[in-house]
Length: 327
Ligand code: FPP
Ligand code: MG
Image (cartoon, rainbow, N blue to C red; front, side, top):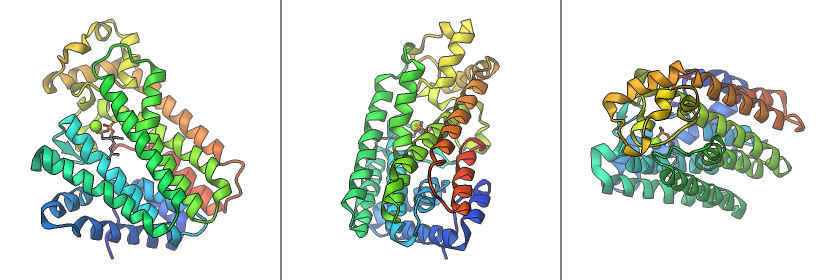
């Protein structure tokens, strides 16, 4: 049986979900490995490496937890993780990132061409996998999420090194680039797992925890430490991604407010010092508070639904886990 990649923090979720959830997560892992290795030696190394680098497998977990019956949702769980992996491989090309999850990225190991091709492969296999569900709705949901991801990424490029990004614009970008895929995972679970009437509320739950997830990701980029996050502190600053911690800190700290972001002057050597400034301003606490607020909204989206206690408990634990993490 393939080893599970879910981190220890998510053990209570697996416990709450019972034997069936663990079985489905194992089957997801095996299928991901098959797909990654099954498309020629050239790409297999990079795709399997991307898979082996781990990941929390939060999106497959959400597909299963939003479904009354697990097995029909298996291809959707695999598909959503493949799509997520594709976006990370492509994101590392755009960010010229050297490290992800503590390992060299496909971009740094194989170069731009190999990383673009690996991302394309993973992206196409996601939709191929989804055909096994026989559901046009599921294809539509994942396709809409892809559109959101692309729009979010383009928005991020347009805003690179800009001093004018408002908190509202930042949140809209996070909704597009991250929350849409969490939402899609939940919607597909509901649609394929026999609870289409719950798709709206579960989709909202996913969207809110997706936002919380990205908010915390942006906190961790500033706080590190790299040994836990698997990437250098201040990577967002270096690649020009203006995030909420920086936006808030600039309103608190005159020195940061004067920093000319357009000059892209913050190199890796200065990034950690700027991160220290951001942390000292108290901005990280405010961003964490916003993440907790989104988690509370996610939980509120579940209140009108009739769910078995074990699934409600597991979903609430995922929501908490999104903000109570260090990597
Ligand atoms: C990681 O976020 C990146 C994303 C959430 C989305 C990336 C989207 C694309 C590259 C465009 C769409 C691509 C496809 C294949 C549909 P981050 O950069 O904030 O996090 P990081 O610090 O982990 O890089
Ligand atoms: Mg990135």
